[in-house]
Image (spheres, rainbow, N blue to C red):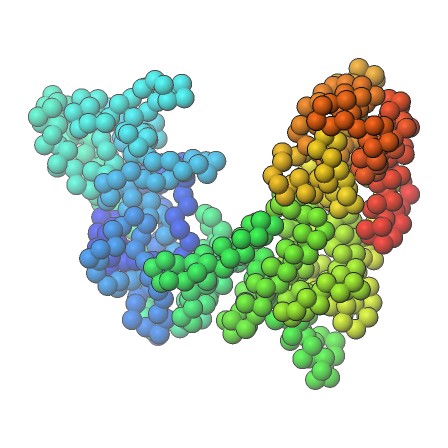
Amino acid sequence: MSTFDSTKLPLKDLLKEIVSGKIQLPDFQRGWVWDDEHVRSLLVSLGRSFPVGAVMLLETGGEVRFQVRPVENVPPQGLAAPEKLILDGQQRLTTLTQVLKLSGPVKTTTEKGKPVDRYYYIHIPTALAGPDRLDDALIATDGSRQIRSDFGRNIVLDLSTRELECQQLYFPCSEILEAMGWLQDLYQMNSAAVPQFFEFKSQVLDAFNDYQIPLIVLKKETSKEAVCLVFEKVNTGGVPLSVFELVTASYAADGYNLRDDWYGSELRNVSSRRQRLAVEPLLRGVENTDFLQAITMLHTLEKRRADLAAGKTGKQVSPVSAKRASVLELPLSAYLKWTDTVEQGFLRAAKFLRQECFTSQRDLPYRTQLAPLAAVLAVMGDNERWREPQIYQKLARWYWCGVLGELYGGAVESRMANDVEELLGWIEHAGDVPRTINDATFQIDRLSSLTSRLSAAYKGINVLVLREGAHDLFWKSQIRNLEADEVALDIHHIFPKDWCEKNGITRRLYDSIINKTPISYKANRMIGGSAPSVYLAALQSHPQVQLDDASMDKLLASHHMPVAPLREDDFITFYELRQKALLALIEKAMGKASNPA
């Protein structure tokens, strides 16, 4: 027996059912994400009677009972009970509903993702110049129905009243399916253009009104497994579905709203797990996929340990995994079992990172290293056992090997899974050292090439300097304390750029992290472009600083700076000695020697 029907429906009838509520969205569907250019392109395709793809709907009333919501911006009051749900075609149908059926502005975005309000118009004379001119004829105004130039100072086109529309022959797209009202106004405001309008109706508007949308309608008897599989397979074009969205669809078929759990819902009085994590500044970048990966690793670790305990061997033993396929297979029962525990694991991870002197999300070398760290700390229970010196040292060594070995960039799902199992084994049973520690190397010449603050190792070395107690040259306090007080800080050159260029020091040398250190904005302003011997004297004699040489030398040493060559403006000797000092810091954190160049 067939599980679906294939048919066609006039576009205007389809949109009418959406506005009435007979067609709605399963609540797990993502929000509308099309930008202005996508909207324009779809309208042009319809106006030229080009195919825009089939729409897939699911009949309601079967065993699959999703929570539902109306299409974007359709008023929720007084809607009919949904008879069908949109599985594929949401972005197209939402676009057409907003443009053709709703009277307000279309709330879309620019290509760069900036939210904007748009009204869409077709310039009648341009559209009548030929089918290939429809793209030129279709324009978008701002929320005031105007187009402006010169950063909004000059009005290029004003369509803010019906009279201006009629006089300039710009037809609003929101009237395409109900054009008679605009025609009546045209009779009164620009009657000479009425014959031109009827030609426009015949050549352009009728194409929209006669357009047939191909429909595939899954019958209500379709199983939830089939619905979820179909949803995954059909949503591969346009904006690809994330793992989170696919898992959300799977759980929705079991009556659980994963989107509510992560984002929260005022309507259903559900608090947001993401917001609870974001209370910690270090966790504000955690994504829903990170959270799902952490749970998946613990679920698969549990399965692996059960297989080993049952005497299974070889390929019979389940692997620990963080891969996409494993996340998609994560059962709802496992999510519910681990979710609160993993949330606590992430919160402990933030505590650990604060201990290591990380203070903000931008300082983190790798977001990807959070999931395995959180998973390990989740398993260790709700006590403070992770703070025990022996355990803490192992956690810290593993973490810094990942950072300074630059091992958590790119595709790292396998490394994450291996680290969770091996790090726990190393901590709990004194097993073998995790392979991330074994794999990590730091080449001596890597320091000279670290110039970008986006590099993981660059961020890590900066934090290591802070962790060791670096003091600011002006405020004299430890910089880690200044950061907590929100004093403006950044990483600045020690031998200033201007001085280096005037003295023939190449950019490759002066721009390296070897010649940089974290200091306050106040100290950096006083450094300027002067030689170290000059700016150090100026700093020491400043009325608010007043330091003798010995006291300033102590502050400099807290940054692992060789003091004598700095005071003598000897860049080369300074560079060589500070490179050795930073390498010693790196080796201490990694628990292993650096490799020769």
